Amino acid sequence: MRCVIIAPPEPTQQWKENLERVAPHINIQIGLNGEHPEEVMFAMVWKQPIGSLVRFKNLKLVFSMGAGVDHVLKDNTIPSHIPICRVIDPQMAFSMSNYILMAILNHQRSMYDFQKAQKQKHWAQFEFNERQLKIGFLGTGHLGMDAALKLKYLGFKVSGFSNSPKKTSFPSYSGDELEEFLSKINVLVCLVPYTPKTHALLNYNLFKKLKEPTYLINVSRGSVQVENDIFKALDEGLLSGVFLDVFEQEPLPKESLLWLHPKVNLTPHIASLTYPKESIQQVLHCYQCIEKNLPIPQQVDRTKMY
Ligand code: GLV
Image 1 (cartoon, rainbow, N blue to C red):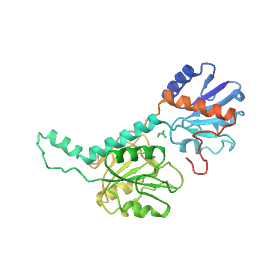
Image 2: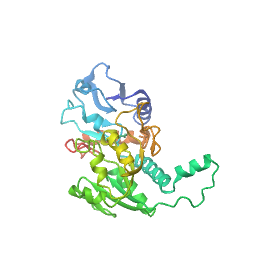
Image 3: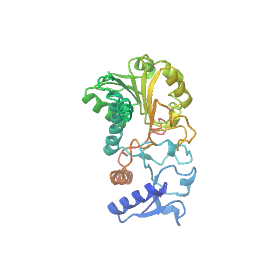
């Protein structure tokens, strides 16, 4: 049996090594140029070139090497009968939740102000209060839910907004309740998948619906945010600060004003990493389910795009 990996070199190498370890019988093709493409049964991809999968006539599974599938679904030449699956992984949720927690705690305990004070050898005792946070999760899928529940457990006030109504142990909004949700928070954590519906969702109109100056954390996709509107909202005080892991253009161009803005903290799209060691088991499991005609776990709904 043969599989193909189409991805940048570094993740390719890690996924290859892990697949060799757990399934030495599988013949692994790297990239598009192997002979007998009809022998390839499943593909593991990250940003594959559009149209590149059609040569694999007997493909039974396309697996996104990350949680997001916008990079796969850009390509509408993948025949609709081929299931697309994605990583849904406790290790990834652990990584994402810790990132969000880090951003929230630094904000809550005014860590950036204390760092400035330290540089000036200034003893800033009692100058900064612990902030009373009302944390709203825009998107409560696998990753959003994990972070929301962990923060709730730690004693934070948490609420969520999701595409479809959800039963949760914290206040939860959906559909036309976005405005109500936004009126009740002062931290907005964005974890929505990128779809035509979420394109440019974090824009000035949305920021205007916030009732309190709000701290924005975006760990979803850069195309969900409008960076010019973020600057405007920071200037006007609608946003009190932002912590961004994703950008309209990546890598973030050197000339972007985000790099040095005093109210911006940023990281280079590393909020949650994929762990090939765990994820490779998921690929194999999805493939076995397809072979046995069993329900396929982690399958993406192509109309919802997640
Ligand atoms: C990373 O951004 C992912 O989608 O896994």
